[in-house]
Length: 338
Image 1 (cartoon, one colour):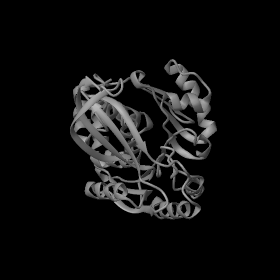
Image 2 (cartoon, one colour):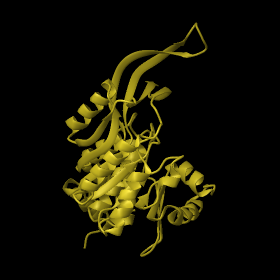
Image 3 (tube, one colour):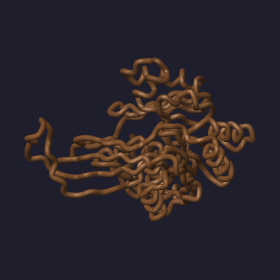
Image 4 (cartoon, helix red, strand yellow):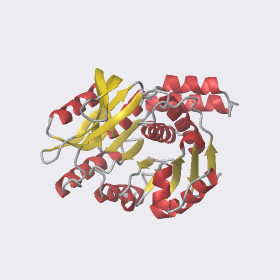
């Protein structure tokens, strides 16, 4: 019989057989890289001498990027503006291999772009260009129609909410309908929601909700200082969000998975990160790995362990990094059984 390590590696090897629908807020992550050697004479601020610049898909785009890096086939359902950033974003996603036929062009809003200035491996400042207004009813219906057409053709769904206006009640009506028809859930097509305030009231049905510590505190009203606190908050959120599982990421304390029924109702996972340089995008990586694990037939506990390994790899990189299935398997092999 395979030991736990071999089971996790075998599960990661099945990622390339999965097809995932990503729904949510797309954005461009722009990085300005430089060095600091002096203070400005104009104001008491650092002067960053730019040495490089790069752009990557961010938000739901980073989730798609992580899924593709892990080997999955990905289709994206979202809205971008009719601008250079939107066109660049679509081109970057298509070059990665994502199906962008579900991305709608809205001429009334800009494409979200986050610019991070990084000097000596540290983020100095971030500049956001965006609107947070909810997309219009016509675009809500357009996204819902595409989502409905994709549900039964996908092995899993991730809703990546960054509170930029794409995630709306119409999408969760589609999820409720999918549950009513018996096509969504554990052992079927799992749906993972990565939540964001102030949209907590939108989440009416899902397979798993994946808040971080601050989001779980805000949504549950419980202060989280320990894993026991996280388990308590998770149990409250199970009923509040009508979800089958709540996965709370806790940074240096690892993760806590709380399930509604069957098997072990609380699973604690130790962190495997050795060095932490940048947590940007680590939540997206954890979401991708957890959802892929469920979609590939893994147990919730196995999914939490793989998500933890994946997040532990990317926080050692600067910027929104990704991890491949091969890197994930190597990390598991080196770590050994836990």
